[in-house]
Length: 244
Length: 350
Image 1 (tube, chains in turn yellow, cyan):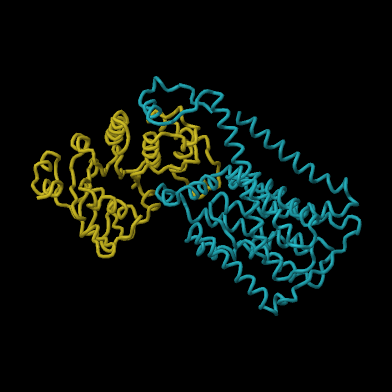
Image 2 (cartoon, rainbow over the protein chains, first blue to last red):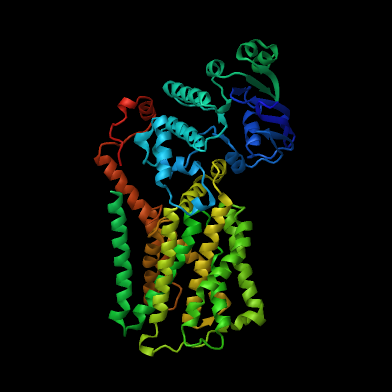
């Protein structure tokens, strides 16, 4: 199990009488681009929120980088190298593009009392902006960005802290085809540089060409796990998506 | 451009404080001028302090008058018998600030677990608890009889001056801290808290720490202002020292001038306090002046809903953008641009 970067162990979450996540366990291998798919309401986003500490699990724990954590907290996990994006591209609209990156880069206690954007910060952020080809927007309030650009910015921002694992919640939902290609390219580049990804995605073509392995979730628990090609023919998966 | 803006800021501050420093020297014998200005500057300092929490962090505290009262009672209780030459009450203000800040920490820690309207209600509860304590904790506060500060032995012709200049100094300190917040990662972190606290957690911002820093600093400043006020008016009664109107004053002025800006709270105070004095003078002792006061506020909010400064700078920016011919409808056309670096330089400048 040493090559597993993240393990989810027996996560359960109930909302009233509905069990959204039901004794769910799976692992994400170091260096992989793992997809988490499933029909609407299968618990993908709930699971994301539980892994990143936004939602307290009723039971279960995660193991990240060899450390077992029963009550994950978003800020702690982020500093440990597990970061995430949100479905709706959450950025800080009043801050400039560069400030969005700088604040996500992390700082020490001493840094808190230091300059808002130091020269060092600026250099680091510009490097990231260059990678994402957003240089020309650097000093624009990020609220003026288009939806696709916001998704790119949010992605770039969570990379600022050099995470080892990035959870992407529908990175290509609601953006144009050119932007989907751009997003895919950045994921591949970063993955080649050693970043592990766990991605919730509805664009099956993208999942099939980008991700391996694929975890299929139905009614809050994994029903299939494996290479995209095997998943596609799995009768359980077909039943979950199409009904029996 | 940046350097130029910084220079304009310095010039603005020098002129503002320069004029305020000179005014008593010029109008020395006209007591009402310095008297009105003391209260105006007091509210400017209070609003600037409130802005650290209510503006920068986006936590609309309604309990700040409790700390105003805390500062006022501290000075009144310590200097009940004698003011030792007259300047000692000013000298101990930093200690009052530290004490108030320490007391505010546990309160802030609990209150800031709630947000928005719930936070407002929790903090206003703090205010009423403080007022009830002031009324009933007779042995310390003197109850409804209040506490008096020993009279200051200042020369009659310039009696107001020490209070005036200390109040002005407190305004400078509050604005200095406000500026410091803006220039450091404290301000950057607070801006993320205000915009989206959940997301701020998700990118590793030390949310609780920066919220508490803002709250404690803000309460400490307000306590110092309360201390000077107590010394100036000489008597501290529960209904005036821990007064919801003081809280409302801070909030209204900050909203009016512009939340989360450096000059907005000051501008708000310099409009509302003189307006209030003028209307009170015109309409006499009746409470009618409150209508006029409210009317000023409503009219400005109707036309500049985000407060004066943000609304104006918004308009200026839009005008400038229109002049540069980049009224972008910022949709997919713009997102396609980022995929094609060649088409990048199409005038997206500020």
